[in-house]
Structure formats: structure tokens, C-alpha cells
Image 1: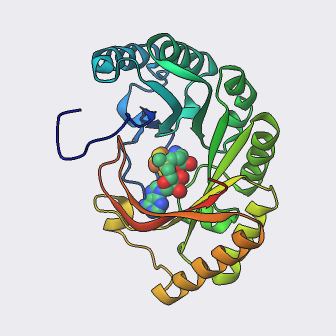
Image 2: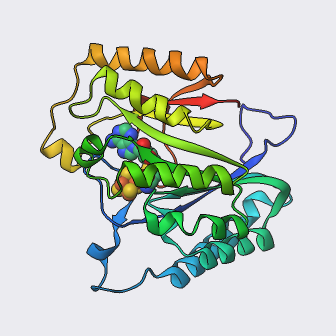
Amino acid sequence: MRPGTLQLQSLPPLSLYIHLPWCLKKCPYCDFNSHEWSATSEPGQPLPESRYLDALRADLEASLPLIWGRTVHSVFIGGGTPSLFSPAAIDRLLGDVRALLRLDADAEITLEANPGTFEKDRFRAFREAGVTRLSIGVQSFNDVHLKALGRVHDRDQAMAAVEEAAQAFDTFNLDLMYALPGQTLADCEADVRTALSFAPPHISIYHLTLEPNTYFAKYPPALPPEDEAWDMLDRITELTGEAGLQRYEVSAYARAGHRSWHNTNYWQFGDY
Ligand SMILES: C[S@@+](CC[C@H](N)C(=O)[O-])C[C@H]1O[C@@H](n2cnc3c(N)ncnc32)[C@H](O)[C@@H]1O
Ligand code: SF4
């Protein structure tokens, strides 16, 4: 917002990222700003939804002078595991956003969700609260690899969650990971084929990386050699291409709530 060498003819469209930092369990590879709820609270305590929403609202109000009069085109509610929040809490959050900001009438509103049964049964209520796009953290459809990643869901739950998302939302994304402990090229291909069988409009595929300060950094699992990981990526690119999904972003990225850079491990496929 300060005068500088970059002179824009008009201000670029805005997107809003909202971070909900809690998870049921911390995954051993994850260095996102995400925290196991039971480890940060008294046993049996519910998530502090109301207090956190109050804090988010105060934060947004304090930032408003930076963006007066500008329109927000998309909202991304990420985590953590935002689907742990109740639909009523997401409804209140989006109500606050609409009250404080000028939000496009057809703004895309994405919520990140884990594929547990508990979450799947709330998908339609999230849709009713105003979420238009669900991003589901599937990671793999193979029970052996899901276990190696310390995930709290299994293949059947992942399949059921994707089916439900495809029915309940305008559009959806799947997160997959590859180059997993013990994964072969055939395993990777099977995961991608299963993902594509749901005709997802968008897939984000992450090369598993060992991030500093994670459990995997301390106790590294045996990973496929680099050549095999490249073969997997080539196969992923072929299969997604055959399914009509364009690779439009290869990125090193950082975002609000994320402490470090993931280098060249993130690939986006879709019609963007
Ligand atoms: C913030 S996580 C959120 C989604 C949701 N909490 C979940 O786990 O399903 C976003 C995505 O980052 C990817 N990711 C996280 N840590 C990673 C790592 N060390 N290497 C590669 N991908 C990673 C996973 O695919 C995950 O779905
Ligand atoms: S990968 Fe997702 S569920 Fe696992 S700890 Fe990270 S944010 Fe939470």
C-alpha cells in the first residue's frame, strides 16, 4: 500500500485466507501451524470456537483500513482441520466476513476438510452455511500408506467423503501426496486413478517432504529414491492430462499460518 516502484493501474482483486489451527491428531510429516486439540486443552474440552471467532473478527476489524472499498473475490478457510469446527461456527464466521467486507456475490468460498466420518456427515451443513468448494485431504486411498502417514482416516472413509463432497458442493479439490514410505509407481498410479474416478474439477498433489521439526525429520521413514519420485510425477502428469486436467502451477509456496517454504513439491491440476 506504500508508494514504491510498482505502479498498478488498479488495485488487484483480494482473496481472504482464514486459519483454523486445530487437528484431531498431529500428522508426523506436517509442519503447518496446526495443533492437536487434546494436547493443548483439558481432557474432553470442546474447541474454543466462540472465543476464536471473536478473535478473528477483532483481527479482521483491525485490518479493514488497509482494504477500504475493495472487493473480496474468494475466501479460503484452511488449517489445521477447519472441518472440526461446527457448521454453526462456520456460518457465524462467514456472516462476520460478509458483514465486514464487500464480498463478491458469487465469491468462491473453500473449506479444508479431513475425510473422517464425523466430518463427512457435516458436509451438507457446511454447504448451507455458504461454503461453495470443499478441499478434502485424502493423501492416499491405500490403507498401508495412510497408516504410514499417521492419518486418522482409512480408504473407505476417504472414498465416502469424496463421493459426498462431489454431490454436496458446486466444486471440490482433492489433496494427494506421493513418494510415500513404501510406495511403488503402481501404488501411486492406483491412487491417482482412484482420485480421477470421481472426476474432480481440481487436484493438488504434494511430493512428501521431510520438514524440519517434525516427527519424520527426527525419525525419517524410508522413502522411494528420487528417480522413482520423478517417474511418479511423470505418470501423475500423464494421467491427469488424459483426464483433461491441466497442470497450471508448480510452486514453492508460503501462506498465512505456514511457517516454512515447501520447495517445488506442490503441483496443481485443474481448469484454472
Ligand atoms: C494444511 S494441510 C491441510 C489439510 C487437512 N488438514 C488434511 O491434512 O487433510 C494441506 C496439505 O498439505 C500437504 N502437506 C502437509 N505436509 C506436507 C509435507 N510434509 N509434504 C508434502 N505435503 C504436505 C497435505 O497434502 C495436506 O493435505
Ligand atoms: S496434515 Fe492436516 S490433519 Fe495432519 S497435522 Fe497437518 S493440518 Fe493437521
